[in-house]
Each structure stands twice: as structure tokens, then as C-alpha cells.
Image 1 (cartoon, helix red, strand yellow):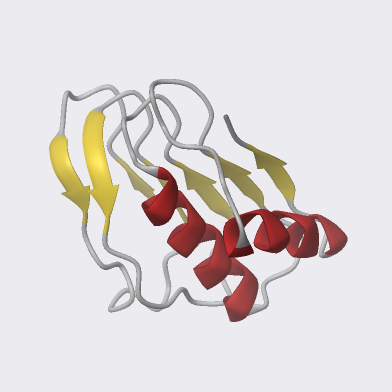
Image 2 (tube, helix red, strand yellow; image 1 turned 45 degrees about the horizontal axis):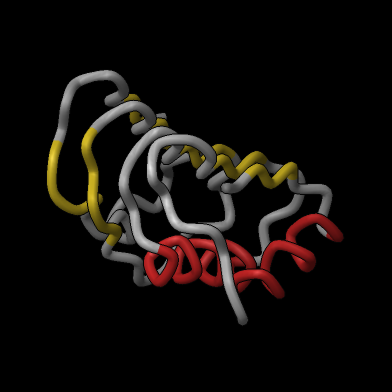
Length: 107
């Protein structure tokens, strides 16, 4: 688990694909403005990027990446701050994740 919340971090969340054993990351309540998403591991069960300023396109990529990984029963939170709302394929990924017992909270 990687926790770095409430630290006034800025910039992008880096690509986390190299960490194959990470079960979650919480980077809420920072000043993050992007997210470099490639792939997620199936062990990832907690993603909390709430309270940041991540645009819809990056939120969409995160949701699509999680859905593609195929993990069941997790939590995704991108609510609060000025984070963008999921659109298009990102919104479709929300529905798919919910069907896999994920709790998804967004703006």
C-alpha cells in the first residue's frame, strides 16, 4: 500500500505499473493535476485520488486501466477537489467495475 495523502504534492501521479505487488494507493487531498496510467496489477484493490485536480481524461484512463486489469471487489474514489467526472469509455468502465463489486465514487 502506498499512502501519500494531504502532503500538497503537485504534478502527475507516476506510472505505477512497475510495482506488481501494490494492493492500493491513497494520494487524496494533494494538488495533483494528472495521472500517467499504463497498466494496473490485479492485486490493486484501493485507489483514492480524491480531492485533487485531475482532469476527466486522466480519470477515464485510470478507470479503464482498473477495469482492464480485471480485479474484483475494490474501491475507487476520485470525488472532491476539482477532479473531472468520468465520461464516455470512463463512464462505461465505472459500470463494469461496479459489476465486479467495486465501489466507485466520482465527481
